[in-house]
Length: 377
Ligand SMILES: Cc1cc2nc3c(=O)[nH]c(=O)nc-3n(C[C@H](O)[C@H](O)[C@H](O)COP(=O)(O)OP(=O)(O)OC[C@H]3O[C@@H](n4cnc5c(N)ncnc54)[C@H](O)[C@@H]3O)c2cc1C
Image 1 (spheres, rainbow, N blue to C red):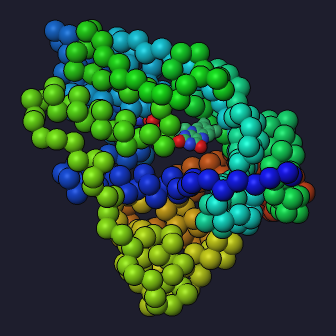
Image 2: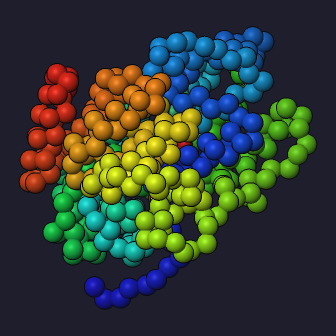
Image 3: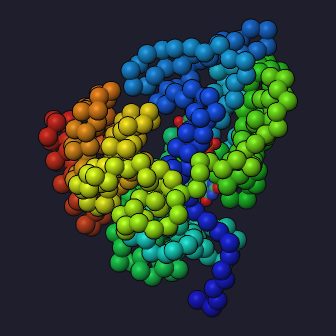
């Protein structure tokens, strides 16, 4: 290494960010329908008059008569637009990432060269996320990382962070970037708003990056307001997502919760400090707080919010206790929730090796064995 340069960069917890947006929308009067899928649209005289959707948990169908429809389905935007007979051109680009146990850096670490594979390490709570790769994807579901991806990511990122050579990789996963045009590393990460006269009240927002999502939201809101004849100015750039966290101070436990939940840390009932997930040091009280809200409908929802089940053992230690808490709180179908959780966790273990593989074999035997859930195909 010849030289290091400090730059202004940052990282976010994507799950908390999504939750903060959901909370903000709800406070502004939105009705939020999680775990639902748009199945079809009906058109009359060049406008969408009915959107039919399905609750994926209950299987119940319902419909909405919209004034405007915003298609923000990411890599699935062409499929959603097609329901209204519209076309959206998009390139799909697969990227793989690894989660290494341990927070090995306090800030984002990048290789100083043109964007390339394996050139970034991002601290995220108790872990370090290593990324990423780039290849054309056949579909939005074509996300699986390969052994080659894994080797490349470890080789390249451990040149920046040598301690990675001694870390356990607890998860390998992938995603698909929705890009304008054909996709690929060289393609601009800009975004576009697409309308089509075949469905005049449908707007598709395509491309972009997470970094630009507030700007994308502003442009979409402006379009919606114009379509509805509303004259209010967009407030998204001025309005924070929730209040700032309380001032520093208090116990070590409270400081940890503040880093995780921001201003909501005070809502965790610290009277119950029993441990739920020892890998990620999650208290039962944290799960209780999340289960008290309207958005924790499945085991995976609670995991995304609290990190219970994201550590070494991938839920062996906590999944059944958590399920018991959810069953007591009501409103969940335990076996369906456990099955979905196991499938989601197992996708990230397809490339597990060494200690993590041994851990994974034990986990599958215990969790699938207890409930006779069998093996995935
Ligand atoms: C490997 C990788 C690394 C990345 N790194 C960065 C980075 O460092 N910085 C950055 O800024 N960006 C990064 N990005 C890009 C960023 O992740 C995306 O721009 C962002 O996630 C897009 O968000 P979105 O909400 O538009 O789409 P998504 O997050 O894909 O959300 C679309 C949603 O639509 C839902 N949906 C699909 N079909 C339907 C339907 N019929 N009915 C209802 N819902 C439906 C899907 O379930 C999904 O939840 C990266 C992407 C990848 C893949």
